[in-house]
Amino acid sequence: MPPPPPPPRLLAGGDHHPSPTSASSPEHPFLSAHLLLPSPSPSDLPSLHLPLALAFSFLADPSPLPRRLLVVLHAAGGRYPAFYHAFASALLSLPFPLLLPHPRNRLLLAASELARAAAPGFAPLLVSLLRRLPFPGDARLLDIFHEHASFLADEEPQLLASAVFAFLRLLAKNRLDPAPQCLECSDCGECKNAKNLAGCRENLVSFCASVLRDHTQVCELIGRDLVRCLHELVLVQEFHELWKDSMLGRAAEICRIGMPGWCTAMAVSPEMETQLLFMMNNVKWGNQKRYQLWFARKHLMVPGGEERIPDIVRFICCGYHPTNKVMQSGVIARWAVIGWLLTSCNKSYVQANAKVALFYDWLFFDEGKGNVMNIEPAMLLMNYDVRRKEAIAECVRNAFAEDLERGLEDCMASRVEDRFMDVIYQDISTVETRKTPMGNSSW
Image 1 (cartoon, one colour):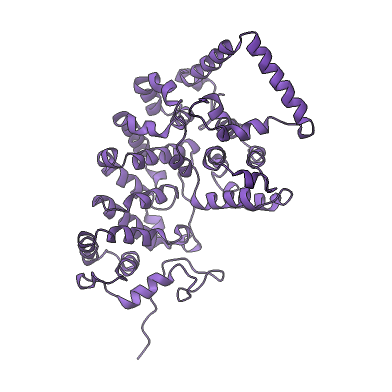
Image 2 (cartoon, rainbow, N blue to C red):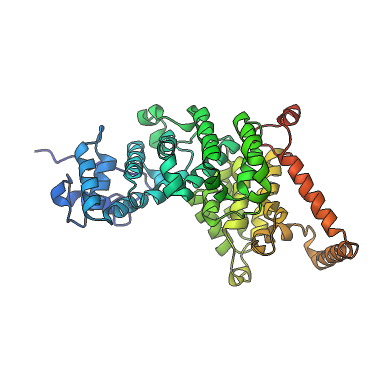
């Protein structure tokens, strides 16, 4: 009698990935639970292995999804309030970039089902997916938010604002086409048949515009970076009309709201965040070049990678504030990482947008609410001659002191604010005559 076939794989294999039977494999807990509960049913509700076993069956069972799995999911969630969260946490524990096409599509289906039931734990799962954009089949994510927009505006406003920010940044970077997640995707029928955001750009624009119009207060949770997003999308007619109709009078007020922490995380993928934090916490001065090259090859030297630099700059400025101990430990500083990113910009509009991202909090700094650590990298990057930084700093202090003595501070502030408002209120016809490429900034 031939041996039974091995259980289906969830993750892409390879020589450098452990076997699912290895305890070090992310698949191991799922496989172990599957061997104990190969066909989850309502009789298994008391089992502690059910969340992992059900997650494995949900991701691995052939199409169409057996209805019994949905019955078990909601029966367990109804009887045990913590089950939904345990199920969602199990799905989150898998490394998304390594998921094979079928499990990845099933993960989106699971996210949709949890959102439909308003199940505890569905919000972190959707946030994780938003940070992965773009990926094959990501149009289903847009469908989820479109279907539940009104509910999310009332019950999970931060999640809806996160979706708007993620989608706006995707449009501004003009990088909707997903890259294959693994070698198995290169000639995969499921990936070829998956509906991607690149094929429904109009629906994406329509969704963002409708949420901005109908749930303006929710979108204002994004803070001043909402204005930055819309400024980069000035050539999109729907956003220009929305700006004139409902956002124009609120721009100054919105710009006084800083970028919240949950929003900074949306600017980069989890892998990018881990690698950036490693560089700024562990890599000593003089050793950073090989780490920077490795990061650039993985994230910047890919289609659409350079357009991510402004968001990376925003993350470094607002999402990571080193302690005094770290700053005194000899590791590479934030301003140096940003300086390297600026030199990595080959496109003029990307460099312009990166500089705006760097100085954005300085333009709207509020002494009572602002965090000086958000503007520290910009201040340090202004010292172009490190050997004479003390003399330069003294000259800058003297210049500001002279301005204050002559009473010029109010006049200067007024001119800066007027210039900024002129830029963001500019007429679309003026922009079109400049032939500004998508994503360009006129700063």
